[in-house]
Image (cartoon, rainbow, N blue to C red; front, side):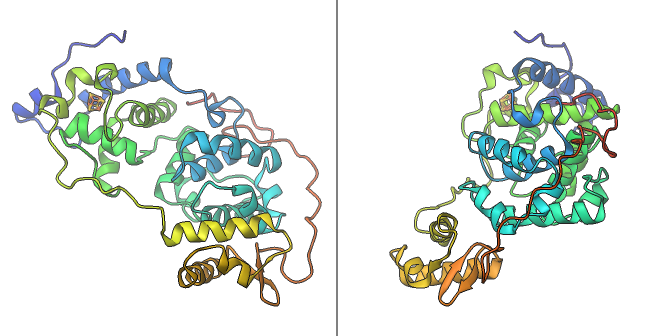
Length: 349
Ligand code: SF4
């Protein structure tokens, strides 16, 4: 049972005319205390949260988790980090190996971007994941969310980490709205920043706690309000759970070009010597759509021509190459390191 502090509710504050958006820092303290208290007992034991996770591990996990559920990410993440514990290990491999290891996580361009990202980190940053958001944003495939997540969870920085789950949670608890809108805005960052404690490591843990509550309890369709630490003061509950202004539209997958691309890419992944174009096109029931999918894969660099009329993963074009030898093992940078061998920061999540 989570003890609830006696505080004026957000709705009460709104009725008195006090602004609640962005959140009042006085409200932020009690909200964060409750959410972090809940997180202390309810957080999942996930591999990227364990002590000793490197900044590279945090970055890889955040990229994988962007559009794929935890259960599917976990085994791929663990194999990825076992094989490529530092960016340099991945940078020395052909890009096709990253696509192959990506397996069926979906949205495989992320694998290509991670490979490019590893190369830039190795060449420009000496193999150390940068710690500043501005530097992180220069890396291939690293957007506003991932840059802040790495800065917060790897380096304990005070940065608002705002994903869909956090936006929905804050929209409901603070603003009385059913969801957080289609995309993260500057106002979302301001709102969440106002909720965070001033002490950076504590702020990073609060960010992890908000994300976890949004992922496990304040879920989109049927939030588990009876076990939510914010239920006593949730503005959305008090307002009678008003509907979203625009109903959610589920994304179709079956029969889409995305599914066709996935089928063709899986064939290439399973055939290291490449696949004949005719076989690729016949792997999908609609030949026009199959050709469109193949063209898209070629344009994205996920598939390349490996011989006359044959296609495969990049890095094996023409005469097949073997994987270069793995670099000599080096000391693995711990969470918070900016130089290898530095003392690790305490875990923030
Ligand atoms: S009480 Fe329900 S709607 Fe409000 S924040 Fe908690 S889970 Fe979400």
